[in-house]
Amino acid sequence: MAEIIRMPKLSDTMTEGVVAEWHKKVGDKIESGDLIADIETDKATMEFESFQDGVLLYIGIEKGKTAPVDSILAILGEEGEEYQSLIDNDTLPSAAEEKTEVVADSKTETATAPIATPAAEAPKNNVQPIVNDGEFKASPLARKLANERGIDLNTVSGSGDNGRIVKADIDNYRAPGANSYKGSVATVVGQESYNEVPTSQMRKTIARRLSESKFSAPHFYLTIEVDMDNVIAARKAVNAAQDTKVSFNDFVVKAAAVALKKHPGVNSSWLGDSIRYNEHVNIGVAVAVEDGLLVPVVRFADTKSLPQISTEVKELAGKARDKKLQPQEWEGNTFSISNLGMYGIESFTAIINPPDAAIMAIGGIIEKPVVKNGQIVPGHRMTVTLSCDHRVVDGAMGSEFLNTFKAMLEQPVLMMA
Image (cartoon, rainbow, N blue to C red; front, side, top):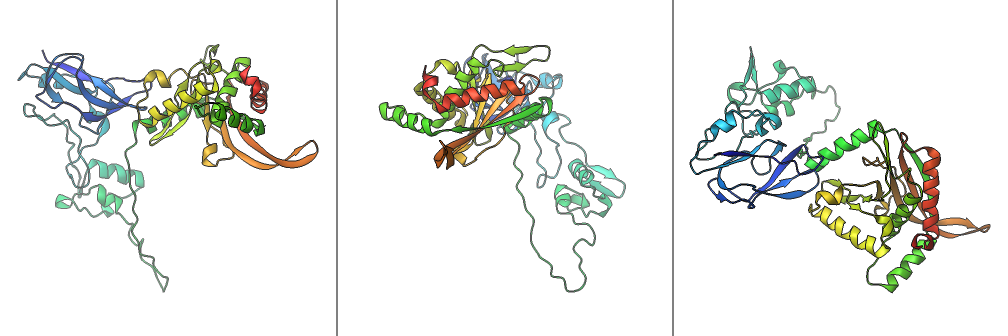
């Protein structure tokens, strides 16, 4: 009996997915455990295996297209089996209904529909009619854009069939008289252009989660300057004594982990009716990737040595950039660190990464004149800014944590104890 395979929910934050690649085609025989597609989530591209046997009768989402979780991804059954009734009677939203406005003019507006199969009938109602308002005709998308931009369609000349107004006509529209000049004022002639790129699943999730964080959690910020001279010396000594090379960021992660054990109020989460004070320390380390930002997690960071932290961070960062992180590698953070020092940024503020109650923004190490023992001498300073959720972390609590963190870096031997 034919069965529907739906777009899977591959992470806790996933609401829609993109089919990055199909490994099977209509008519192929599939066994349970066979790889049938690669699905791009908001954080990674993951392999999707079949949980049943059968023949691939129908593909519902084209390669490169986006669809909500639970949309019809494919249908498996016996060769030649009827399956159109499954599509017609399905009550969950389809990819076509959710994602794309379909119009007739393929030159200017792209239609999205399931991949055509030899045995399949064309899905019903997948093309919206041209709207005809008396004296002019316009596609639904052209009408929508005109409404958003305040354009009177009566003033637009249509370039489509029979004078129909299409998206390109709205994009190229110039108000009457907009380019007319009197006198000898010089006119600069040029062509405006832009490139619109579909929003990736990762960028959508970043936008949603950080907007929720910024506008729901009352942020406040604490900034402190750290003397990094001793860390510079300690790092040189550690790297000279072993094969695994540690970075300044590894010292930051270790110092933060030790400080969090001493200040569990910062290692916490707001749950609405309660506050969770975590006894374990899992530090999320922000990693810049092509589409945005991922935050893989170093678990039990307070119990790990600098070389262990260094090895783990490098491995997780590589997976993040290759989109090979698994859910257990990005979930479970209790505190986060974002370091832009390597990009020449002296200081910045970061948005809290839910469910954490705080995030620490690390600037670059700057060589500057400082006062020591009444004398102006060269020194190395690093600016650190702690973003706090005021529902959980108060000013005094955040300040005490930052001063402990500062002490760990200024006397690195303290974090080795």
